Length: 343
Image 1 (cartoon, helix red, strand yellow):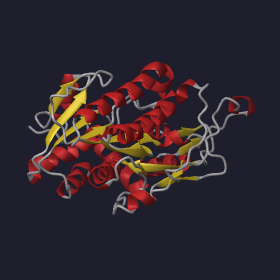
Image 2 (cartoon, one colour):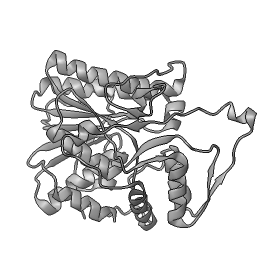
Image 3 (cartoon, one colour):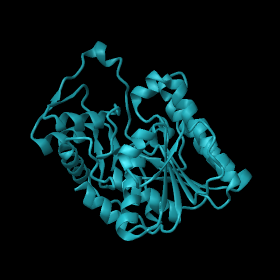
Image 4 (tube, one colour):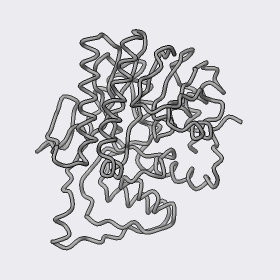
């Protein structure tokens, strides 16, 4: 179960007696990270002061109760430099394709201005170590490549509004490296794969999230393509364990892919795994030639995780194991009560 997996990771936590700010606190990754930190405090005496940054105080308190200190603001506004953080996990961002399309301006500015505000804070607090959660989308299109390592860079078409997310994340990465070089701040970059887990938001419109919802509702999963392109997927607890490892051991200014070699699959395989777990089917509704012209021609994107593995990290969850735990948790979530919340 998700709660047991959180406790297992919290027990292994190396970070203790520190203060940590998590931006995007109620998002997929931020909320899972706070779950782990909270359990480390409540059950293992980690003595971590957790600051949860978000725009809605009620959402923060409803999700985390007394486990956190709420920081209620939009990340596009400067951080309060009077508060001392030892670590910052910067995850605040528009993080789903629908938002990229409907709010391209907000998507770009949230990424760039939000990142600048975190970096500006770090220039005033030399002991603070921050980690930027970036995305595999910064690679763009790399012709002839299926496996992407951190030193590669492809083409991003700036004429497509949806690419404001990828382009602004690429800008954020360069800002982090520039601040590290020019101002000597302590910062690292994590490029995330396609992430899923029990802490997914209801507003998330990614394809694999829709498959999970279909499975949860006992519905067949309909694919409008053969779904042959392969991606690196990662269960959210593997992502959080990697982020915590990087905070402790990552080299300043460096970029690290986060991926699990046991969780590489095609889109069709993700759909099929979801359907098998709950006993439904995958139905192919392939478009005709005219309809197909409007579809994107996605390529394989497999993240090389050698740099991360060289730090001693390894993923724990296969795709099936992560999806089973996700669906099991979501089935039990019948009300607004949060099982991880400190009563």
